[in-house]
Length: 152
Image (cartoon, rainbow, N blue to C red; front, side, top):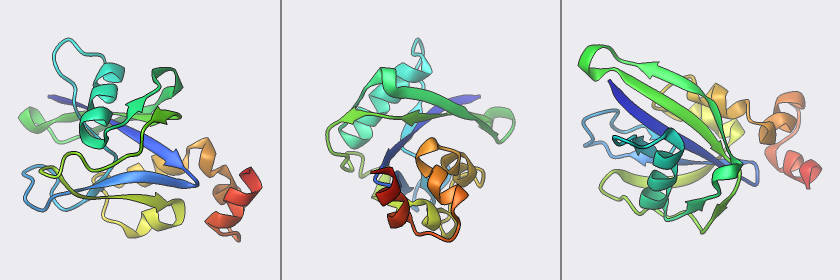
């Protein structure tokens, strides 16, 4: 079984997603939260901090991270256990520091999640459950920019 960790960085009503290269063996040509393999001897939080720095060049504030849930995919040797985390605070501006893995990164608003090919279908629901997106969930007739104004 592969143990993987991903992190949801949320800013201004949008979550940062990475687009996996079409040439990737596992989960090609889909959008995902940034992250990667948990190495031997690492906790999920340690792996999350390492992966966010390697892939995006940011340093997460560990105390601001909380686990959203776990996804399970595949079976046998291809089984994957994905720990999904919310990162509340980080230092630095995210950039694509892993162009061999991702061909794009983008801040995606909650209303745009449903129209994207995501690595796991349940990912959109997990991101929508974040407290930052409560306005959009409870006021379906308002736009994301209206919610940002309400939260300011």
